[in-house]
Image 1 (cartoon, rainbow, N blue to C red):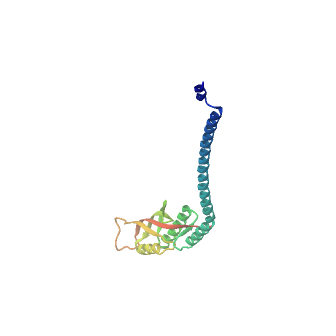
Image 2: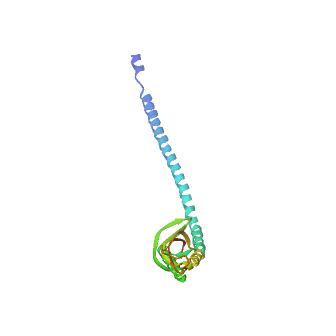
Image 3: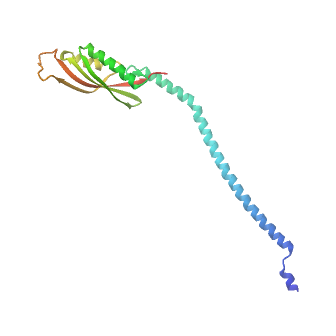
Length: 190
């Protein structure tokens, strides 16, 4: 009988074992919860840093906008640029100027075709191709007037032809020109 008694566990020992197991389970759960809180705290800190960075960018916006507006005003005042709100208006201004230059040199503009605009170094490039006739004696003056015009006109291509039956001594004989001119456009200041 003594042996059977020794083999049975005392209720106190069983309760102690259950309490220990429950404590270890609760401790494991607590460690897991604390780890989750630590991860959440790290994410909150990262979010706060990102929010502070975004607030700093928003705070810089008025100063950057003022700088941009100042640069636009300075660009608009450059004498060599066509100032227009869009490329079509700048092309129309350019066509009007070239027509005046050509007619001022006893010539005639037969056609003008605005080419697709391009962009280079922050400026819009307006291109127009012209078919023009001008008396031979005025060719030099026409090219000089284009070259010295303000806003600047740049000749990128020029095809010059005379009639096959042209007489070299006849300086009033018309010469046909196909010119591609470029100009830079600045935005109108707002």
